[in-house]
Length: 237
Image (cartoon, rainbow, N blue to C red; front, side):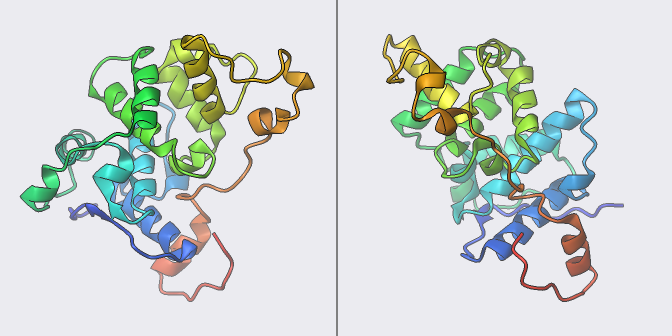
């Protein structure tokens, strides 16, 4: 049986990408009792739990306060853990639990965009709007900085919880670019320099492939080998 452990409220301060990836994967396993690659997301409830665990795991990679990196307050994080991961023991200083999330204007705008077009009720949609908006200011593809396994999981997440917005992305634009395009259009602004995407010099920026490796999932075999005490080679994960 999976043992109760204490959730890390402070992110990994290591600058080594391999150590960060292992830390994130261990956080995911702490929350769910399994590795990301093993997650069964066939049901909506399981998928929501997987998405939340992935985002929290990714937030532990960047150094500093996990609530801030995840886009929620310390209190909201404790409620989220109690609701979706009840086996996890929550122990943190009162000062940290009272941490409020200081959104900058860019994060607030994306969060508001998502909240205006929610398609599910309850706390999870509100949490996800804040978390997605906060992770969107990181440097990688959005699905990577959310800790998801691929772009398809991000599309599923947005279609499930923010269906009216997701339905507007008829040309399969990269989600982060799409958010900002929607913000511009809603304000009556024009983000693009050409009226037709095919004629734009930045076409690959908006529609290029988003292939890559999950920051959290990594190579399951390597994590299993590490857990069993084997020495890993120097391959990046």
